[in-house]
Image (cartoon, rainbow, N blue to C red; front, side, top):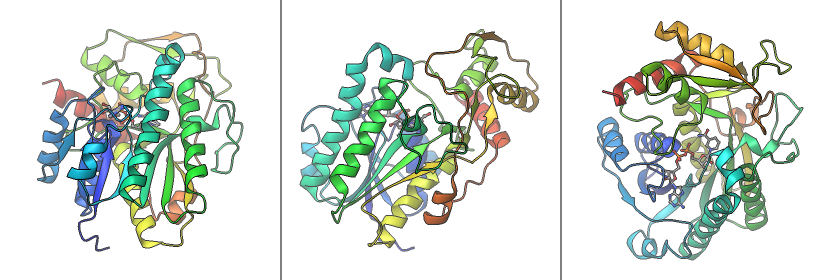
Length: 342
Ligand SMILES: NC(=O)c1ccc[n+]([C@@H]2O[C@H](COP(=O)([O-])OP(=O)(O)OC[C@H]3O[C@@H](n4cnc5c(N)ncnc54)[C@H](O)[C@@H]3O)[C@@H](O)[C@H]2O)c1
């Protein structure tokens, strides 16, 4: 598709998913700017993006949760045609301790982005949602029509509120928004130039595994081995970060090419298959030839036993296909860990 260099603003562009999505967008021919306060990232990621794509993007260091902080963009970036909104806090446990911080950053941040969209007449928005909106669902694989369950954390509730906000705001308008509900993004770009590098301690399983393998952590805990699953540990749907990134490009392509698309829609992004925590550990040990130091601990409050996606809607409507398997996820994550630890 000819994109005539359409300019896309990526909020949270220096973060994990944002940076990989920028690579995919640039490779697909979009122009990109990033808006990131760097609260959980570093601008060095822009060097990594340049090494991969040969293109240098600009980052605006703006805290989007601050009222009207986006005003300078009205002047400096008049030709933005779409926004992909990643900027948010994502640590479930922290959100339980500091709900107000999460509501302010995730909900007020989204409201500010919507105000900017309105003021600048930007027609397209892609919103980072999460499978956490389903709560403790018993529908497996879970489809987009499943009703939102009771959120298991303030973080989860901020994602539900975000989706409700978009539904209320976009229904019946000519502007369009899509929520992408991520399952468990993991892995890194194959080059090893970008990957998951939070400034806050990593909490997701794959970076915890690779950090233990490299010696940054002495050991880690598997939370619960008495779930009603084949090996007793929780089951999740792990999706390669580059497949996830590509779905954002596909979602934008879709909105641009389909003026009659619904003004609001939501899509699951997973590979459609679940793996247990212990299966992940075994697979990593096989790939790396290392023995991981971990202990079995009690269940963690708020963790769902098992969740994996029905991804058929994204495959059919967005013309998207996840191409990478679990082995490639772990291999690329391990490659990235070794690369950044040099
Ligand atoms: N990584 C996951 O497992 C996962 C799963 C489901 C949904 N999500 C969602 O995807 C999005 C991106 O997640 P990620 O893993 O890339 O996280 P990340 O922390 O790596 O990236 C988020 C980026 O946003 C920036 N940011 C945060 N608040 C900001 C603000 N107020 N103004 C400007 N910049 C701000 C941070 O500095 C960071 O660079 C988030 O909305 C998250 O909730 C992530």
